[in-house]
Length: 506
Image (cartoon, rainbow, N blue to C red):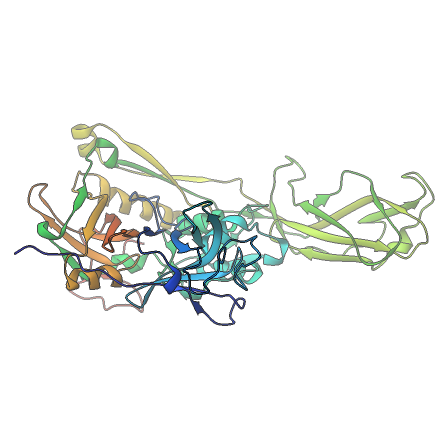
């Protein structure tokens, strides 16, 4: 007697009354003959894949008179019968058997015309917000902060927040961070923070933003799910020499900081016209730059603006009569990690010309890169050299950089069974329960006789599909848990050092 797929119930909720004002269940209008998809997490398996991209989900709702309101065009954005509160950008979550599997906001609404009378809906998770939002001066200086603290500072300035936070304390304190982040997207900065520690940043299925320190996976000794041949619908195991890393180079970035706050770190090159009137005034933006090379830099200890020293204003033309005193105390200045925003205004009755505007402080320079290397000659002799470079943008400690190179070499210098993806169909209630319970960074074991796979892996990404026939299929992007000392590492204040434990490599 064969097995038959177990079909989960699909639920969809939306925030029709606005963010935080409650969820409305629209499940009765979700079409069962259309595919429901969920794609989220870290999309690769390599050592550089550490930050999730924007997750997406999709489903379809009925738009004919057989929907819950019995009106045509209920989910068309520009129809007279449009459902109250239905719009782009509202919160949306998808449930399978009652458990939340995706949280985001509606990104696209595509009604089908004519006889189809259905609407395809696309949802994106909070990582899309991070991919859209650029850092601003409000993030502020990041001096002597851990990675999780820097991430917290970025979030504090963002207009949209994840559902919740689950941050490990970072393992390293960075003397300076975000000093190279001029007009960069938050998601790009997440990548720099993850690379600097060898951490992971992603969303859990309930929308919780996770900062996972580098020791979390080292200490994860037990698998929460074991899959065998009969439970696998598919498995990808491409094996190439590119997966063997036998020369590993890391780069650390110790900063140099000016001893005194006298360096001109911002110098307005153009003459600025400022119309009369009070605050808020004219907004000006500027990056801190190296006064010698002109390269973008960070800066700290920015000094208060002094008339004549830091700014000059004239009347009628750039060479007109001096009117600097009319701009005294009339700059609202927001100083960031690598630039500043000014709101310039004045009390004079006519337009003034701002002919000079500068900021003085302590410049922060990323000039002394340290390159570190770990190499295995035996592996090179067997397989040929494969050299890889890992940049650690905010890491200032070359001991950590060398340890990271040594650790990556240890893990990847010899070939091993690196399963890239597995595919599972919910053929039993046990499999369904596992598929609905699993999340990013769960450790699982995969055993398959034909390929010879018998090892542990961490889930990096999750793709779930509910087919038109109601079956649940899951494809999981995996990365190796292969580590000679996995599960027996000792970390200060985390585990006990003894005969059966060894210090974590870094």
